[in-house]
Image (cartoon, rainbow, N blue to C red; front, top):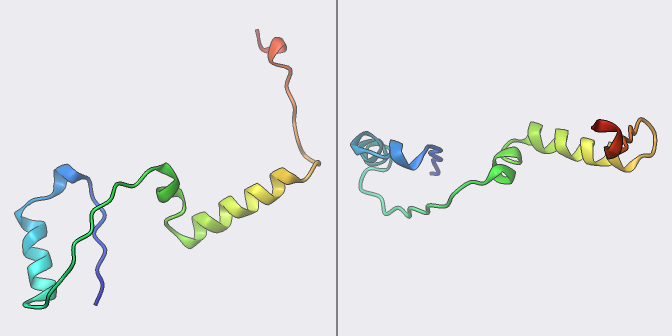
Length: 74
């Protein structure tokens, strides 16, 4: 069985530990902790990945591209 808990480090507390114990009982488990950066978050769901992939492909096309001269922004 697999369970994913996504939370801020400051949310870790006894309730989380009890939830893990209740879920996995006496089974041996492995806890892996890593931070999520913005890219991880943006790619975390299929819908997001698909949206970003589509946007990247559209950006490669030369139509519908707006260019702005930075000097004109002043």
